[in-house]
Image (cartoon, rainbow, N blue to C red):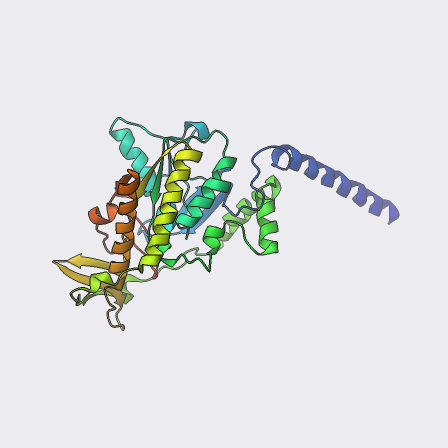
Amino acid sequence: MRKIGKIIAVNAALIAVLLVVAELIFGSWITGPEYSVLNIPRNTVRHFDVSELYPGYSLITYTRDEHGLRGKYKTPKDIDVVVMGGSTTNEIFVPDGETWVDWLSKGFAMAGKPLTIVNAAVDGQSSLGHIRAIDIWFPNIPGLKPRYVLIYVGINDQAVSDKNISKFDEMKSPDPLRRFRYYLMNHSVLYNRFRQIRGMFVAQRTRLIHGAYKTTKMEWKPVTVVPGSETQGIPEPVLAAYRSRLSVLAQKIREDMAAEPVFITQKSGDYKVMKDRLFVRVEKSQKPSSAQAMWNMQSINRATLEICAKMKLTCVDLAREISFQDGDFYDPKFTYQVHNFRAGL
């Protein structure tokens, strides 16, 4: 028994040494980017069952590379455009190569003006998180010097408060155990390989669709707009704080990244105007709410345009141009956006 125990101990020690050597060679404990406890998803491959969203499709693949980016590029120094935003840009349930950011890149290529465009969106992130990303995330990406930074902003900033910073904007979890987990994720090659293998098995036995709702449970109901109620949007102090964050964000993009910021306004999917009448989407058993959601979104978009004019920035007023259809949003809180990736843009 002693001999067997000795053999087991020696082999275990050899395996431990090999694992340590592998970590030192292939991990980023000594060399490579220093992401520490930053909770940006990196080296991530996830699979989602989207059959309830896209008839004819089953599992799709969602990938974030070693720098936490979505999209194809040779090296970070080749990136022309970085796109920032929340879940409506991240599009976690849209497969690699088919997000609106991917189609934007395809559009430029078809127009004869190819650009390398990458997706740096983070679910739930607001302009506050974008500022922190420029401070503590992007400096770790070697050679990143884009010409433009596009920011699809507005929806998540409605919930930003000076008193409470969301976990999406914090970028460093206050939970010690989660910080330790992200420390492993950001350095250990073996831990990341384990997560990828585990994810493939989980995807095969689990329907990984969260927050989806059946459109049959929802319907559009008309709302009477009271004259003068458009002044009841987001309070001015909140808008002033938002404008201030956009100013800081634009300045950091220009000074720290030597790039040109481009702001894009947003429209949420919980209201629409048809034949000059406002409709809101609610469950069939509920009464229609007020026009508050529309006023809120319009007031924050006006604030975005004001900063663009004041700082002489390029601004795309997409909220005025785009009209969402049924099926473009699947989360009941309308925080996630789904594009018909088979049809493209």
